[in-house]
Amino acid sequence: MKKILVLFVLAAISISCKNEEKKETKKEKFPNELAKVFEKHGGIDAWRNAKTLSFNKGEEVHTTDLQSRKIVVTAPNYSLGFDGKEVWLSQKNSTAFKGNKDFYYNLYFYFYAMPFVLADDGIIYEKTTDLVFDGVSYPGFKISYKANIGSSPDDNYIIYYNKNSYQMEWLAYTVTFNSKNPSEKYSIIRYNDWNSVNGLLLPKSITWYKKDSVGVPKEPRRAATEFTLPLISDTKVSDSFFEKSTK
Image (cartoon, rainbow, N blue to C red; front, side):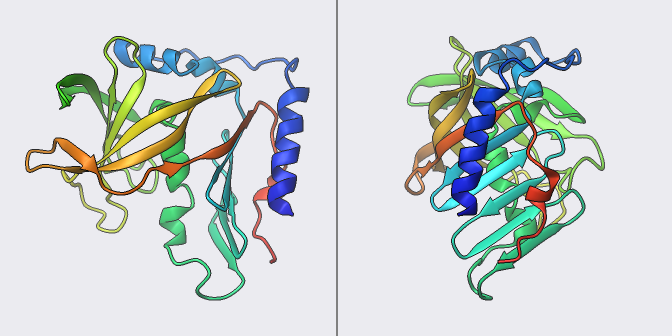
């Protein structure tokens, strides 16, 4: 019921708030090429004005307050989220959720909200070597973080884009959540196709790829992860929505 209610409320909000006054957006400084990627995907101003994002991944509904980064993930047998102070988990039994709540709660938000999350504060941009796949070169930028930014400041990302359209095509990333140490071991995702949602391009699906010995993607590692029922709104959801569920 909560899942259905969230989608209904957000759909209504996205329609009713079209005429709300937009807040003044700050001036952004990005490499010129990366600014064109953001513009291709709908523009930083539109992203900055948005307040609520929701999407489905299988039976899970992921909802995020884009200003505070509070998050709730709801599924039939469990829910988890971040209420602004702590990460919480509520489940019907001890085996309903099998992951690490602290790692998982915003994992798919980051993958789904690409490339815009790569415009967050505290980011360092660096041009990197092109990715070549099936004879096509994709220019890239490496994204790293200043010290003490987020829970894993040593994580690195590389965004690769189409050099003609500036649409995002690939994402390489490292994971340092468990080790807390810098890593040069990159996983890589292909962004297969996109939805236009209130003027922003959001992914329909993403696919993890296997790599060869020199890091070139070769073939899909598994079936694509699909996202459905995308919603984005410039009206805020109540803070109480992100509090721990009592189910």
